View (spheres, rainbow, N blue to C red):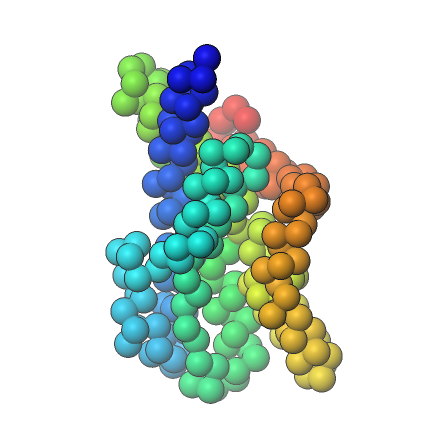
Length: 221
């Protein structure tokens, strides 16, 4: 019984690792790419506009990702933030808002692509054999994880992307005070996750987004 549980855990982590890692990396690359397009070359100069995972990996974020993947429920993890210097932007506040939006939008687009690929794979070869089953599960989990990454990062908790979007619409003095909470942001997130509140905040939105996405391609939940 114990051997079966260990095997199932390893299998679960392996199935979601590649699409989740891809989502986390492309999320950060999107931040850097949009910043570069807006005039800030910092990410490009530091070698962060690459899909090579090594420059993006945060050891603690990776460890949390593996642990939450193994435990089941909400999968949580993070990469090294892409450095952005808003002084290079013509409009720093608007630039930071656009850079912040780039990450979640990329995750939603990636989820859309994975759902489309899942529909194609099921039409061509409906999980017949271990390889096809692995691909189907990876695409299924990948779509869900990327929807989750988008929803998580849109929460208005500094330093998540949603906070930078909200800050753009706040008066300057209020925005400065609001963003000062950033130093406690990770503690707040881990606390919400430990109390089980993160699931309650995100799951309804995630499930609605995923149902809407899957319905576009006639996929079951």
